[in-house]
Image (cartoon, rainbow, N blue to C red):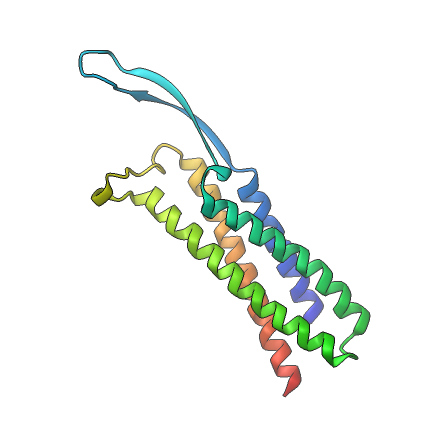
Length: 163
């Protein structure tokens, strides 16, 4: 059960990192500089690397994916015979849960501002212009959330084994 859940966590965090890591959309918008001058067409590109929360999200999911690969090798090699390795892996699983939740929260906050804007500081919503970009970011967050739940299950399994 532990190995299957680790494979699931590996696949989900890898998919989340890739889905957001390749996320890019270019669109043309009309920009009106002065009322007396006709609007100008401008091509604008939205990339995940332009938002620090999305960069954090991709990095944390890549770290979680890498960690899962290493922990999978350790757990398969020891098969629960070494208690110290098992305790260390459970603690690191909990660290991955915390990191993934923080990355999902940061990305979700930025995504919500992109979706609804913030009238108090005059930030306009951008998801009406970059709809594909926003949908792909939401899918990545969903995959990462399911992956973090897999890590949470691993923590619960690890604690249950100790009882």
